[in-house]
Length: 376
Image 1 (cartoon, rainbow, N blue to C red):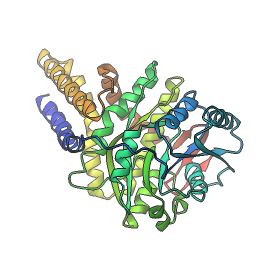
Image 2 (image 1 turned 180 degrees about the vertical axis):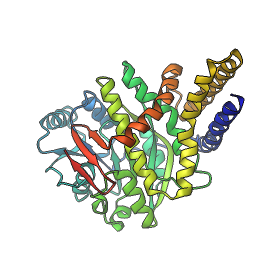
Image 3 (image 1 turned 180 degrees about the horizontal axis):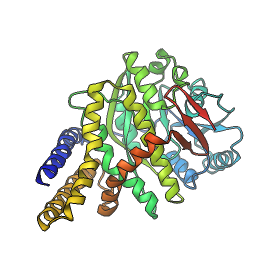
Image 4 (image 1 turned 60 degrees about the vertical axis):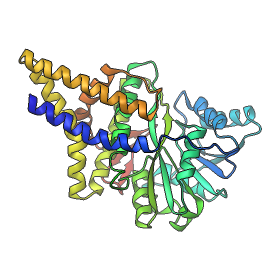
């Protein structure tokens, strides 16, 4: 038991210490520009989330002067109603609504929309933002400050949970793992991928790389874009600027479906990497919850083991709270949800390994590889 506990804490510190160093090095505030008029915010919009209208409105209020390009499916009437209501409510905001035809078979629907929207962009900087993400003005200012002539800057996500258990579990998974997944490599290496929920780059940088056309047939558009841009010698920058994600989950099935999609995407990422990288990811991310399960089982064997397990949980809570406060002080503390979230991770991984059909909002896809997926 003591060996398991020591190994578990060692892995946690291996992730925590570099991440904490990165956060401490970027804790100075950035100057806010008077306006973000040189930025176009490109958002693929899809209805189905009750928070859609409030999230889109929050970005309109936060990002003063930015241009907004909302990419909506032709047959998505609800998303069209929401967009037009916001146009009327914010008459001074620069909002353009573009209706998109259905993506062809074998084409990533998000990448397809982005490719259509990119042709309309004239602004100096392009911010790609998911329709469930809220970016603050200070975060955008920091990202723009880190953006160079040949860079892509991606934000650090955190989740604003709803009042229900599924939403809190999903939020806890992200808030526990975001900084410890994205940041530890930065002192010694570049990011392995990008956060597809929120990233910014110069329009000319993307133009030199061929826009979004080269990633049309890749399922994981964020990994595909990261790999493509890296091959074009574009530098990927993981910012400590935070982006708030607010997704409403109606029930436990919705939670399970979302986690299933994320873990399938994680498996696809692993397949793209070499053996050394796979081993490092497996040890740092995959071994942790298995060790926790082993300690939980052994804790029922004796009072000594139970005491060691309680000490591990206390240390775990203190480390996670410290890193979360360093990311953003408003991230809430929910120890029981946090523990349950980690214990569920092996089940999510097993589910992703045996079931390759994912649900992406209202669409279902059978996944064979990152380049081969079929709508069902």
